[in-house]
Image (tube, rainbow, N blue to C red; front, side, top):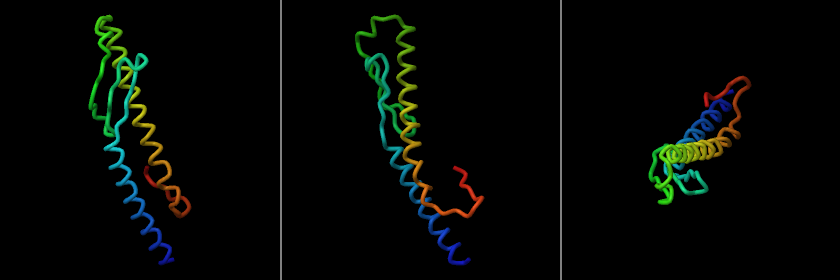
Length: 107
């Protein structure tokens, strides 16, 4: 029993290290959200910080409401991409952890 608990603690420590590494990787990653066929692009980090907004000059002649809608769509696209990459990165981290029956991690 003691050996099993020690092994579980080692696995938990490894899992914690893996999660920290994954968080660091995601924080430094950048994604680009697009709208209007790439006429608006928003570059965002894994922490949801917006790094850049690019608007095709041709859109500046369009009506304000359409431009606002495209900016919102590009921002939402970037957020969804960050969430998808985060989910993908964390999905396999706890798969190798042999938890006792009924014990679940809070994440």
